[in-house]
Image (cartoon, rainbow, N blue to C red):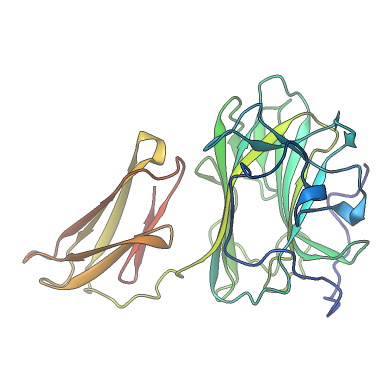
Length: 303
């Protein structure tokens, strides 16, 4: 399937055209589907309703379970996977985090894409907001802003998109490496004209075999700085161990003898009371491997 990856025009939203296909939170590990084409048995869709660009549910490999989603060049009756999940008209306010794990075997030599549109409708209009380019031939990953990460083959690698609609910012991570400059605008991303919403996610093969996806998690999270301050000199540090499966957070120089709540990735709350020196610590284990964001009071840190 051939289509432009960097559209030269942005379009206004056509109210009432796009229908919600999934609301948030959207969490899947794909183990409950039958093997074979995905869209035909779910509320996932294909680009412009073309039935032969579906992805495949496979048991060749899985991250948290037996199965995953395979985007293919030509397999199982599907040619050049272009898999869509629509989210608009969900009422997007505040901050959101989209994570999914991708596996690219070292036998791949082509280029494949993870994409998010702020506006998606079958047959248009479309507005691109995020485009992560995995170039196996060059061994790099990039998102169009000059920053690159090294492509990691033969491993499940976390792709994370953090969006703050209140502040009009977003960041994209590949394996914990940021691909955008700090405080990059969501509205001006790609060709610009992005409304404050996610219209769709888009897993595109680009005539390349193969890439696998698993453990999707798209949720609303607490925005940075929304908590109450816990001291003028307070600081937070987060440290990841075992590839991110364990996280330790330390709060220092906060107000003494004060109740605080630590959160990792917007959840998994840990309540603590600072000691007489303004220190407190929280630990988490059993987390998904990859990068994590810790918040406490009006502070945040990543590891």
